[in-house]
Every structure is written in structure tokens, then in C-alpha cells.
Amino acid sequence: MKTTPRSIQKIIEDQFKKWRADQPKMGRKSLKMPVLTISREPGSGGSLVAKKVAEDLGLDLFHQEVVHEMANSAKVSKKVFETLDEKGLNMLENWISSLVDARHLWPDKYLEHLMRVIGIIGNHGRAVIVGRGANFILPHESCFRVRVIASLENRVKHVSDTFSVSAAEAKRRIIRTESDRKAFVRKYFNADISAPENYDMVVNTGTMSIEKAAKAISTAL
Image (cartoon, rainbow, N blue to C red; front, side, top):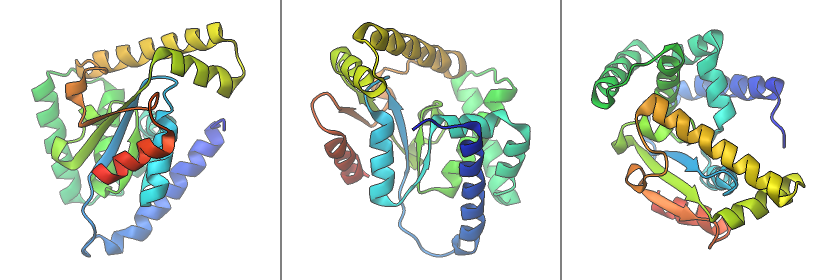
């Protein structure tokens, strides 16, 4: 399903309403669960795995496009910040400062907003975040970091079947997207997106179904 700018805005507005409705419950005891971050190789079905886990566990799902819009729009970013109280915002700012120092980052305005948006999602909890380097932003003790992979052959077939394009075109799209994602993580986080040490779990959808991959992650959570 194609996500339009209008549908992204609707998703964001619905999320704000949910956070506001949940605020009175924040002081109550609830199941402690780390935020799940999903990094994925293009064509591996990582977004489908994330959707399945979110549905199975009743978690909020934040796709890459939604997180990007939250960070890229000053107006939306301001609304995101308003969902935390002063104590929460102070804790967030302290964490971001320590992250910048630890990773030797030189954040531009977009990265500053991105770190705050993902940090706020992490603070609210019970969420699945797809992409945008979330696993490099959230504290390790508060997130479970998953990388979804598959062989190039499997990924080419998946993209070719999903978008009804030739194998050559599917491979071209995969290589371009993979290059963009690697460059994004290298630029903003001084890290290698494919290095296994950056994840708590690596799932291969070339050897298991989307359902089995989601089940494995849910069980680990």
C-alpha cells in the first residue's frame, strides 16, 4: 500500500491522540517491554515483519516515512515534544547530549529533531520503530534491536513479485536503496548498518516465513 503525505499526517495525528489518551495511565503498573527497532535489508520483508510483531503484541508501529515526517517538520516536531512533561524532556536532552559525545556526532537540525522524536517514542514505550537508525539512538537497555536480512536472490524475487518489475529492475532498486541506507547511517551515526554487533537479533527471512520471523522476535521480546 502506498503511503501518501495525507495518510502520514493522519497516522501522526492519530498517534498524538493515543498518547494524550494514555497519559492518565502512565503512572499505573504496566508490562515492561523494550521498544523494538527494526533495521532491514531492502526486499527482505522487514516492514512486514515489523507490522506482524506490532499486531501480535499490540504495539504502536512507526514506519520510516512517519518518523522522517515527525523529524523533518518543525511544526510536527513541536507537537511531539509537547507529549512529554518537563522531567521527561530534561532526561531526553541529557541522553541526547551523552549520545552525541559517545558517538562523536556533529548533528545538524534534522538529526537533532530525529534524535528527539525517536527518544520521545522510546519514552512513551510499547512501540516498533522501522529504520531511521533508531537502534543507534535509543539506550540499549530500553530497546531490542533487530536486523532483518535475506539473500540477494530472495530479495530480488520478493521485490520483482511485489512491484511487478523485472529481476534486473528489482536488483537495481535494491542496490540503490541499500546504498542510501548505508550512507545515511554512516553520515549520521558513524556506524555500519550491516555490522551484526549493532543488533541483538538477526533474522533471515530467506530461510523462514514472515510469520515465523515475527514469532521469533515476539518470543525474544
